[in-house]
Length: 402
Ligand SMILES: Cc1ncc(COP(=O)(O)O)c(C=O)c1O
Image (cartoon, rainbow, N blue to C red):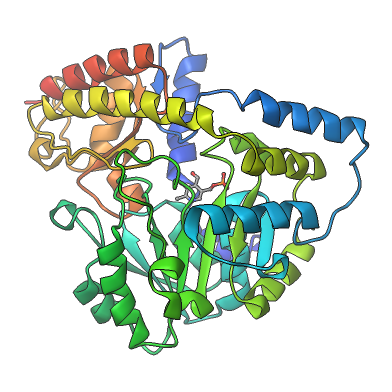
């Protein structure tokens, strides 16, 4: 195949860095190395029993036909109940789209609204897929770097400065992958005040980690905090993280009807809809008991505390305790400029991540993949035993640098 057979947008797109680190880790594993992959973000718990049972009965009821593009009416009604119950947001089923994970809903929204030159503000560190999805829609990601000094969150001043006449969306992700930052009610109010002055800017609120939070403050989402923004907000969530259902591929978005209709058009020409069985299972997840969630969050909190304490004790690393999601995002500026025992210079966070992988067999993801260099991401969605071992190894790999 000639290189130019591939479309320009694919030639310039980056593959997901988290998947790339996991691929490298798997390669080392195949070579017989003992590798602990802390590079991917998925809960290691089984999907709750009642959800699995609901899927089995859907198969037995032969729910094996195409569904509505937007998702079954029954699931969209369950999603509407979820938004009402958890977030105080009222949506009709016509204002809801179900896709193959939150990822497809985000992708559909960008495909439905972004064209050449359109700008999307992405506060970083941010999930690796946001800028790439904007580029795949021929848009321009406007990266706003938000460091540890603002808790990895965008300030109203930074937002004001980033808005231009071409801005279409502000992407907000709380709790955040990779920093674990959670926006408070007041912080969203302050961002909302800026947005109210710029009526052409819409908000894409990615709340996929809503249920994985470690303090008792009520969860805040832009459409609920600033009702005047609801008419230009797409609120996105799903079952992947809260219900340990990453492989089932169900996510959803809710917003104004014309936007959802356009997103349905995109989806109708791509995947049509996600699996009918997964949709039936997701109704059981959303409507069913949530007592297991407490256990999930307790386990993540314990692991977070282990990981953060271990990282804080390493000379050259700094690490704040994340408020949500299941990632730690230590700063590694103190190690840059040092050398490995074999004399290789560690210039960047990517060099450091590669050194940690090669010398100690632990896969982490460099912060530059999330558009905030000088850090790396450790996923603590792994067993306590694995994390204990991985932290010792990271500590050894870092201490070996001179
Ligand atoms: C911030 C963020 N949004 C969306 C997703 C995608 O979730 P889903 O599995 O529902 O597609 C992820 C997955 O890692 C994520 O980290």
